[in-house]
Image (cartoon, rainbow, N blue to C red; front, side):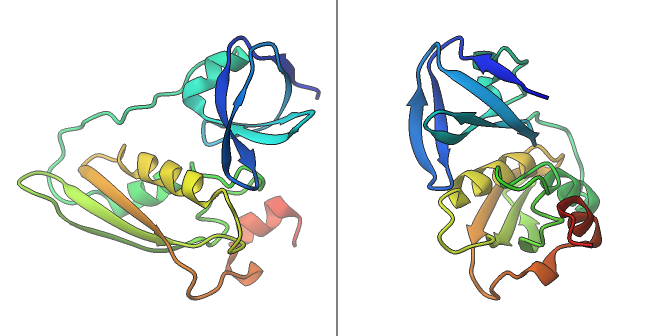
Length: 179
């Protein structure tokens, strides 16, 4: 299905895979190739870009929530809720979330001040040269900070152990056609 759109306003985008921030001008014709985790991957005559969900209006789409809701929550955040939040984070080139890609290495919570918890997460990328790492880490941080009980999240990109395809879950391998 061809999902070609004309940008209704200038929008900040990230060049894939370099990770370079760029502006796409009003009137630019783009084709939406993925809608992943609330963000958009689009193709233009100049390459592939990621547009944040908060800029969805530039594509004629509904804007996704950009600020975390504050929830009253007692005790540490639910581990299942943290993992579910991370299943909404995608590498814009790969239609599998970072959990099923096996990119999340550790996820720990610690008390943060009088109320709430801080989440410390270590993750890797599929390739050390991936320029999209900061954008993916920012998405992960934002999703974690939406989980009830979380006051802040810190996402670190690490390279040990090196990622390999064996780390992909069975579900991820099915989506990618590896099994």
